Amino acid sequence: MHADERLAVVLDQLSELGAAAEGQVGSDDPLVALEDAIRSFEPDHLILGLRPAEGSGWQERGLLDRIEQRFGRIPITVFRLPVTSDRT
Image (cartoon, rainbow, N blue to C red):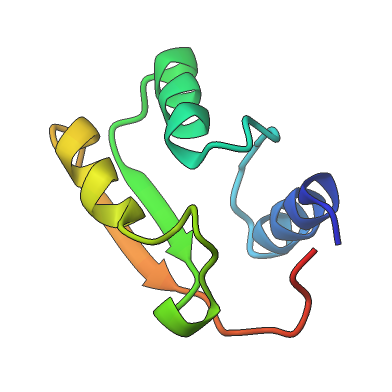
């Protein structure tokens, strides 16, 4: 599943829960994507879904530490996603 398809699934799930949400696919580099998003709409809280360590890719290793260092002024809530066999 590609990023735009995953985004559509998440937005549909949030809509079913009654949440008004929107999103867009960003850079392949998670820090660049997050920085672009923060600059674009100035959130007051970040909610991050990260794969567990055993399912993470090279870009995710140490990612949370880097996010906290760069964007620590914004409250951050993190949850771990389940490991799946779909790595596309």
